[in-house]
Amino acid sequence: MGKRLLIVAASFLLAACSPAPVTPAADPAEAVAAVVEGFGSRLKNVSLLAPDAAQQIEAQYAEFVAPRLLAAWVADPLQAPGRLTSSPWPERIEIDTLNSVDEEAYAVVGRVIEITSAEINTGRIAVSYAVSLAITKTGSRWLISDYQVIEGP
Figure 1 (cartoon, rainbow, N blue to C red):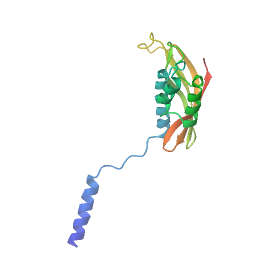
Figure 2: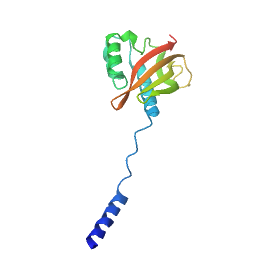
Figure 3: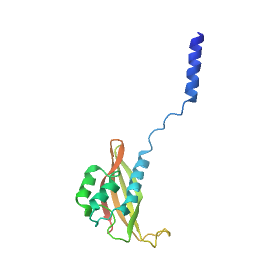
Figure 4: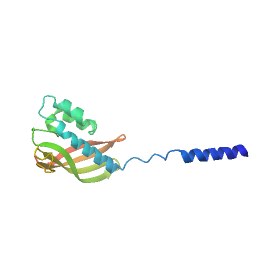
């Protein structure tokens, strides 16, 4: 009986001193928003008219974009989002709506915000235009599977 009590006591102490259980994965909507915002922050890094535009697309967008869409943009860089001129340039995507389609898909509508050097520290916007994005779960990752300009340049 003494050994059993010792084992129970030791088990209790180990459980009490163990780290808290791992929290479940982040809210899917937060993960989707992070993908859109991360992708939006990379738009300025892709010069669509550069000779190496396809390589820039691959390097900047691969972690955010589904392979099929990425391949289409690499094959035809002018169909991809990015920078067409030196100024203004796309600075970010601001999310207007983020809606769950099902457990593995979200529809996002947002605005690409473009700025010039005059707006950098002012918070002002030079140009903005509306975009829609489809975000789908691929394995354990959320990726952009469709991107369309719905109003703008």
